Image 1: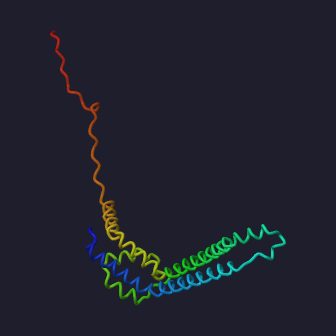
Image 2 (image 1 turned 180 degrees about the horizontal axis):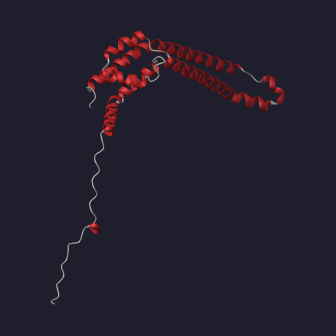
Image 3 (image 1 turned 180 degrees about the vertical axis):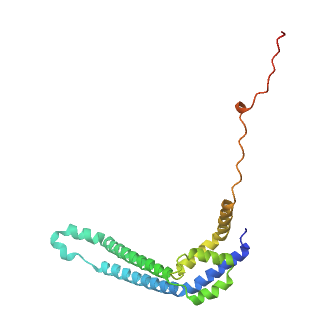
Length: 201
């Protein structure tokens, strides 16, 4: 058995990609807006922290001596850059955690039945088999994560692999050939009858 026309498989992959793009566009737009807002707030907060740090004076610590005051004044910019670094790490990990949670929610979202109904008739039977292979638990709805997995598998040659697996299964199902009789060993061969010379009476 041979898979369907490779061009048809590539076309099906493009159709699935277009469907995914359309279904995930609202989520991706919302993520981009949130991350852009976080970035702007981060820049504003960092600038305010540095501006505040530039106004800090340590004259109130003059009772400790002139040398500590001069030392603190000298390292003051670095202290506030360290504050900015810590603040940036907090914002980064918080934003990354939110993004990962949003991506998980997006993958777990069910594919609308209407979108699947529009997509399925345009796909070849081979690609439909890939969809069924990915969507193993039919008691749960097909998710966007499942459709993304179908897209990856179709593009990585899953159809050809499924045909190869069928050919291998058919090869195993063929009846075994009858065993050949073993060739006789040299020791088991019968010796030729030998007639000795008869003595004269």
